[in-house]
Image (tube, rainbow, N blue to C red; front, side, top):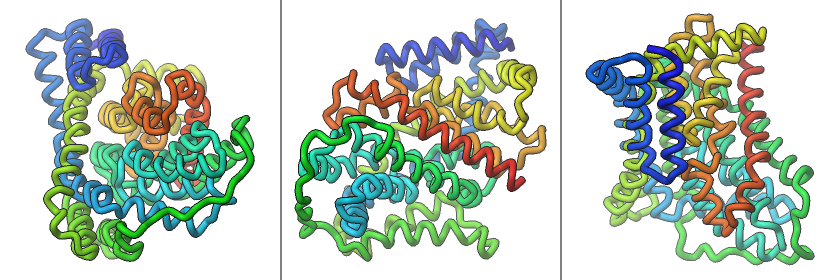
Length: 415
């Protein structure tokens, strides 16, 4: 089918999402429009769409089970304990680094970026009031840290990219560790040096947060520690433990060690509720991914890259960037790019691990645009107006671009 049809379908989906129509329905309707305009019959369009959904089904199952870990960390207060500990260790003089690192580590252990920001935000706003720091700057620190953690986490975007490339999840996470560190340092530089009017008044002494009702730090770390250990068995010992098993086991071990077994069911229900939203989104994403995968759109991008005399290694990060811009979602962007361009990327000699890693990093460049939920959720939790939130987009984009560039450069050097 023609690239024009797929492109129009994608544009239709984006416009509908901007108009606040359900993202899943918007993507499905856009896929139908794209297929029909691309030259397929209605029956062929439906077949291509369902094939696209089949491609993301394994990832959907893994994401649903990942809700156990996410629910445990949030409902038990373990996520807040970890955040508080980081802030306490680094001190008030390094508040930007503390918030960025806290959000990064929460995302790195499997918490969604928006959930991580929402979790750290109360602490951030409390610090901001006491230190008279602008909420906008605090949000950039958290978003930047979240993006860094997201490219090395067992979050949906990483799971999907690894799945579509048939690459080990742990390896895809590992190769982006250095880019994540570079991104973290750059985030601290951005909020410390580039953003004007960081402070709204004189610095004040920071009060200690009350942690009486929260689990201990050692108990809070059990869930992410067990998960990371299980996922590391493959690269260390050649023993494969699928994320479908590792993530819920980590969550269950954590809640038992925190002695909050009465919260097992509420935590699972909470995690399932959060992950179900993503799972439904992925169904819609799978339909449009099937259309794009069967169109000549990727040939257009390859032709543009060829005419621009760019290295073929740029196909992965650029495709991740373009798809994240179209969907305003890291998950959807990584899904579309990896499902549509994985075979092309592998064909030019890029390894599966690096292809998935670069697409994952590229998907962080423009995943924060206004037609996505992340833009509004993070702005709302920090009490920013639409105009204030809009002004932060260039800084977020710059941080995502550094992550994508770092991953790409490391791929060139390593591979």
